[in-house]
Length: 213
Image (cartoon, rainbow, N blue to C red; front, side, top):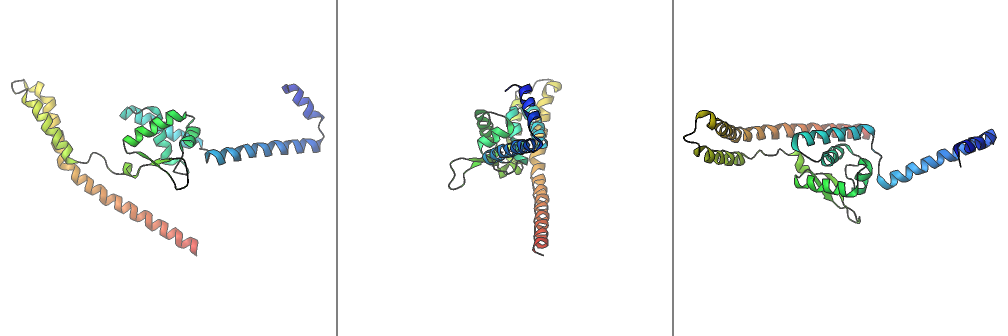
């Protein structure tokens, strides 16, 4: 029905009929929202999606991630519930199933996301991988290997002028520095992480005591 015809029809309704019509319309809208929420989970807020976009841009700029992978990672940090199906993620991020699946596979390769399945369900749920919260590249052996590799290259420049040798010399010095300092930083981080977890546990316990009272 054309818009003008609809308006004329509305004008012919009595106040009571107009009220009933509005009530039916509002109820229809509520039902649509309820069905959508039941099917795809909680509807993401604008602030959640903006945060996901910010993470996507950062990881694309700094690490060369495809934008979809970065957006997915950002959304997994703040989505509710924290476990989402592929369809729910696609609905939230307005992305195709294939795009979301590809992003999940990439994040799995970096141990940033994982798929799990609850007993009785037929679909996987995607969430952050707990391993992503652990420090990466803190293995001093890796940097010692880098130093040895760069020294091999430096040997090829034994007769080269200092400015030609400088880049490899600095890379060797950096690798040796990291191999010495990273174990100390890792230990410091573990101490700080344990303190953070202890404070979190204490806060949860206090909140539980308040609820019981």
